[in-house]
Length: 229
Length: 56
Length: 329
Image (cartoon, rainbow over all chains, first blue to last red; front, side, top):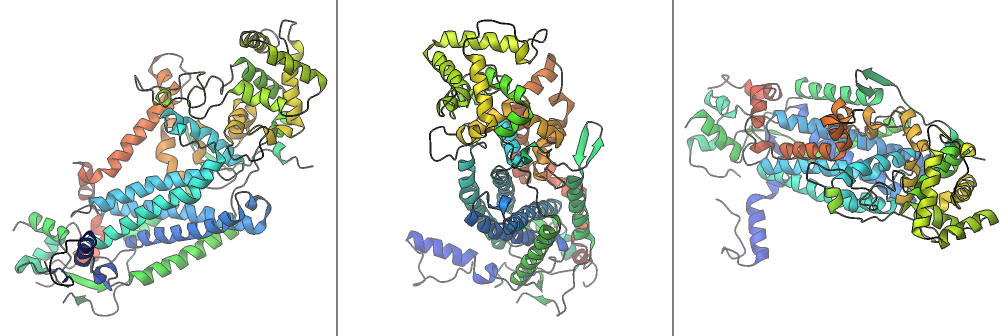
């Protein structure tokens, strides 16, 4: 492997040196910020991952404005109502895009070639998002939040989660919704995206057939594997 | 005096389907999702304008 | 090398085949712009749902008899909250999945004592008319046994389907102690609006925990009727729906779906449907947990992970790339 040289070209012994070497080897800048993608990355289905991220940015931006003014502001202010609407529709789009992204990745069997961790972090991010949304729905301080808190508590209590995660407690859910849930989601999203860049976009399921038919030639098929950089 | 709490809670339309019934807005979202997915995998993606290049 | 072995190799290695220019930073910026425009348009046209919260005052105005009966049931320990069990109290066992009772295992972690928290303490926290005040001191000086006798006798008489049937004026005379006066006192307090501000944390300045308000409100018919009117009941996809003409939490569909099944939604009093309906919350959670695990671990599950190969939608996604087959040898 063509690992980037360390300062003195010797294997690092420090923790930080090992981490740096690993990053330099596995995540060089042209892998993190590539100007090209494999030729098969040519379908609208590929834009739904980045659309999901964009919707998340919009959720955080509109949510930040709502957080500054407090959870009851939007009941009495037209501007507040508009920012609440932005937050509401950004969430709808977020889940819409995420599920389409998920469907796409399923039908592409995108977990192939050591990419299972990417799939798993994505699925966990979806589950955490559902939790984040639930905490958001119960802090609306309106009829909807009253009813959702009343209904959701039974399911959570049934499995014992309700003893700690109490959807009827406005204060607890406010804090979880604006800090804990976004923090967990942010970590998951970062890991998910880094994994995508680390392994690259999954090749087509019939890539070898295309190659065999002369459609594309891969370096490693004919010659010694040398990491093309 | 505000007596809005006495007003009925607003509600949308529902599509009944045996013991399943679904709200029209939720149905629309599901249809939009399916349509978007189908379009995403069928619509042609813009071809590259410059010549495709190979990894050096 | 066989095609399938070669395929595995291609999937694992860094891609060395043909590439195309693809600016993911530009793509992200355009995506953000599209989302910003879309949310502004959707928010501008459709706004967002916001039906005002129900109040205890509204309950007292709309259904005073129900509030009265619920107050009595809180004192008698027969309300939903009083017989709920963990995590609020020991009034019930909660649900079970066979021998598994996680609700019970976790114990009482959000203590709610309906008689005191919903009725006695709120009444005590405010100056009351003299009849209510003396009823309150009679209740407080009585033994727990005596309190229970009064409340149970009145609760039974008030709800007797062949007698008063919910109408307080038709309850036959009996030894009910201070119970009717206390219930009247609480309804009066709720009508004045005072109970709304007090229930969650009587005597406290700050109030961020709304658990008691939600539970008390839910013990009556007021919240339930409003939810029924808005198609928000569990057998109509419940909280997946939204008030008004808005999409709700569709992402709860895999969860809400099970509550729609007649077997989890039955009127049976015996047999498997009765067990499943009574314990639906835990059975459905178990089903969802398994479904989630299956989805998370899908890449490792033989059969399921091959579906994309059997139903080859990937030929559509990658049709341009596959078209290279046989073009240039």
